[in-house]
Image (cartoon, rainbow, N blue to C red; front, side):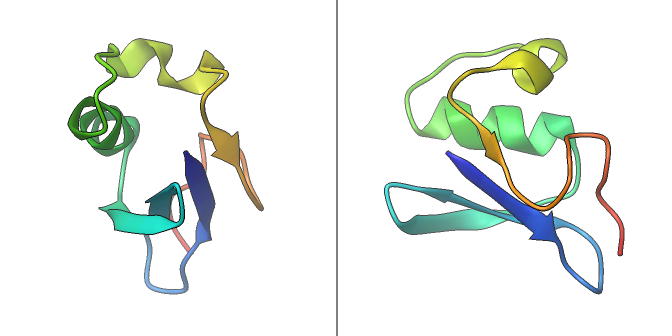
Length: 64
């Protein structure tokens, strides 16, 4: 999973295997996208997940 840098309007685009899953505005959203991709994960564990490539900013940045 790739979480792209925050957009100018807030939120971060999320992609898996080249497919855009949507725009995340929080760690809860990222956990939901992972769940839809077949991985159950607690939102509290998202920041340390080896399956996520945080681009441009870490998991604490969501706004512009």
